[in-house]
Structures are given as C-alpha cells and as structure tokens.
Amino acid sequence: MNPELIPAVNQTLGISLPENIPYEKLREAVAGQISPLITNDFNKLLSLLYRIDINENKLKNMLAKNPGTDAALLIADLVIERQLQKIESRKMFNQQKGANDEEKW
Picture (cartoon, one colour):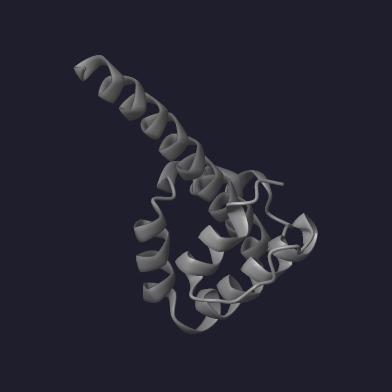
C-alpha cells in the first residue's frame, strides 16, 4: 500500500488512523466515516465527495451495479481510489516540475 495514502485519508476525512493499518481496515474505517453521513447528513456527504473530487457518474454507476452492497463501502473504495490518483498526479507533476527546473539552466 502506498505510504502516502493513510496521511492523505486522515487529512481529507479529519481522522487519525495509524499509518500501518491494513487496507481492509482502512476501507472499513473510511466506510465508518461515510455511513453516518449517508443516513444523517447527506448534504455534508455530497460536500465531502465534491471536495475529494469523486466522479458523480462513476459513483452512480457503481451504486447501480452493486445494489446489494453496502453503499458506504462502495463510496469508501472511491475515496481511497481518488486519494491514490491524487498522490500519483502529485508525483508526476513534481517530476515534471523538476525536469523543467533543470532545463531553465
């Protein structure tokens, strides 16, 4: 598992998970944060998903294709996936930025 994932999830969700947590426990912890929002504060959930930049169509399709699955777990998967994408994007940007800095000289 990417070592930057847990800190990114912690920061995004405002939680404090240990950095050596297994993936399945991470998924359950994220779902545990999502589940109460589904039932008690849907607007806050939508705001969180918007802030994380979860693709709305992807979420709708995933929920439609898995009607018997816990929605919180499905959303947790998307949150984790999106965090990993952001980590990779930052790495690529920093590599490109470093290459461009060298070219300036």
